[in-house]
Amino acid sequence: MKRQCGSNFKKQREENLSSIVVPTKTQDRKKMMKKRLLLLFGNVVLLIQFFYVCSANEPLTVDGKVLVLDESNFESAISSFDHILVDFYAPWCGHCKRLSPELDAVAPVLAALKNPIVIGKVDADKFTRLAKKYDVDAYPTILLFNHGVPTEYRGPRKAELLARYLKKFAASDVSILDSDSAVNNFVEEAGTFFPVYIGFGLDRSVIEKFAIKYKKNAWFSVAKDFSEDLMVLYDFDKVPALVSLNPKYDERSTFYGPFEEEFLEDFVKQNLIPLVVPVSYDTLKLVEADDRKIALTIVEDEDEERSRELVKLLKGAASANRDLIFGYVGVKQLEEFAEKFDIGTKLPKMVIWDKGDDYLSVVGSESIEGEDQATLISKFVEGYREGRTMQKAISSPSFMKFIHQSFDIRMVYFLVFIVAVVMLIQTINKGGDEHTRVPNQDQVDHASSSVSEVESKEYKAGDKED
Image (cartoon, rainbow, N blue to C red; front, side):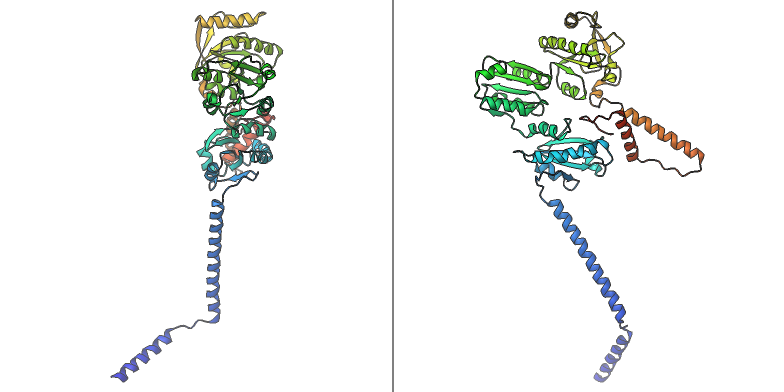
């Protein structure tokens, strides 16, 4: 029995061995090569993942260079820095190309501040989810993130001016000035972009609330030690006093109290804008937050000498009627805005506009053309206060919508271009002989931006391409 079992086992083993195919040396080499290639490929994948994770998690630093942001590091960037200016650009955009070297130049200047401001950029054409999240629909769109809160930047774009403009956002809410030279240096360094408020003999706590509330619109400070010469220079004769300066328009105003919140805020709000506001996209955005009505003067050309003289007269009326905002606009400068107020009437003319869809015309004062314009302005204001007015509807679209769009005709050019392209394609298709290619959205946008650049070669703050 044992002999037979051993014989069966031996026989089975021989059968199993006979069924095994012994690999050749060539097959061994191929298998080994495959294993090595798979192992190498796996290692490469791991290395790529490692470097990707490391780069995504690498801490962002202030090194004076423009940060290249994308979906992997954007949120980290805006949470890591108190102040970061982000340029949402498109590679084909002409305005973006002009802006890029300015940002490169200003980045080290802003990085060297005591409270640094970082510059970053996002290719919005590539990272469309980021662009959509922040409502980017034209290029460049520049957003300033202060402690993570975005505000659209509409200031100057030249490096030197951009630096002076942005320094305010990294400065203290209220600067403490302890000498005449400190006051003068503060005013000089503030520049001309924003109004400046100086509280002479005031405690910081009196204006700190409004300094925080209106930080993006003005500079705030308090002067502790100053001479009588400085009082003469800034035109106040007693303390405490809050002096408002608007260097851009060469305007100054002084408030002696009462320093209760209601009266203090009224003074601050009234002096955030000039006595007579030149109408533009930026100023309309500014006055939108003010609840006062606008006494709007429409002239043919605001650059004419007679228009400049008229503005001087309007300043006198504005000083005596601070419950109204006085503004002016030239038909030559902003026709699509001015024509909404029936410019068929002889110009210059005045209307009262509540920033809505209606305006008031004063009966008997439809025009202020004449020898004694100061009297005609006074008559207009008097007629408005006495209720001798006629309500009229502005031409559509709604002006509240108008405020939220830029005042140019590039969109018209864009639409005309689209229609032309469609007609051209249809014409070629009718020929039926040639293969045609429809431009994609990027190509259409690129071409329309070229039309815009031909229309206006001047590079101005706020210029964008749709």
